[in-house]
Length: 126
Length: 226
Image (cartoon, rainbow over all chains, first blue to last red; front, side, top):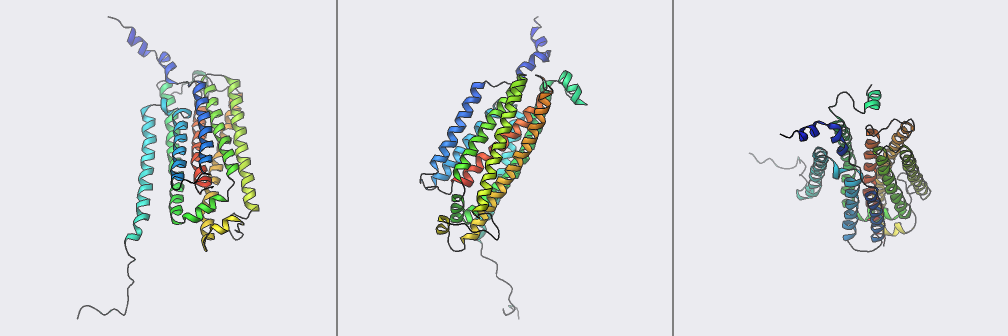
């Protein structure tokens, strides 16, 4: 039998070489230039009247920039599933809090204000 | 305790191996960053609600901000994120001089950002658009505001100063962290096994950058510059 694989597995120093992912400088430069271009683009688009689309585009570009920073500068692309789950759970929880808050504010006007108690109202029972 | 040990072997005694240690370091800072997402998320949520209440005043308010300085600051902060990423990479590959250089570059860009922010705050003070008894914006904004809209524009400016102010505090804390890293890197603390502090501070710095990535369009841009 060949025992070379278990030996390689238990040699954690060899494993270590792969555990820290070193991102090539080229990738960082690509992210950097993309971020600058997106920043210029979002500023330029703000000077053009596109109606409600302005807000959508501005937030879309911001989201794209965030993903670039998260995935490559913050190494999320190379991170373990545990760390991704923590971040996704965080955003999910935020979405719950913000979503429920918005539904509250949005639906407040649906129900009329309660009428105040009035002494002048005649009693309905004899 | 773990400092000396970590410097010699890179491995603190409570961990099985370096991989587990690195994962733990990263997990710790990510959990902290999630609490920061909650913190800023609350501010963004209340901004959105008030914006939906007083849309014209918020749109007019964002036009009084200096979009040129805002855009320059965005570039500065994005550049500092790049130099921070390069600093972490230099630490990973044990290039001490490159690490020192990129840490100094990141700090310089961070200070430039805060300086520009200070210039903006000063201009806003001179233009009397800081909310309070002396709130009296001049010029074009007044035509855009409905009667009574002045108070709503003050709410916008409150959000502006609160959110950029809290962001600036985070930047200042980040600069403090970088200064500590710089001193430790100069002493040669970081090795190819032990660079977690650089990585963790880098994650924090990038997070603060992401907050600004959203603050810039929400405060400066979507009021309609046309």
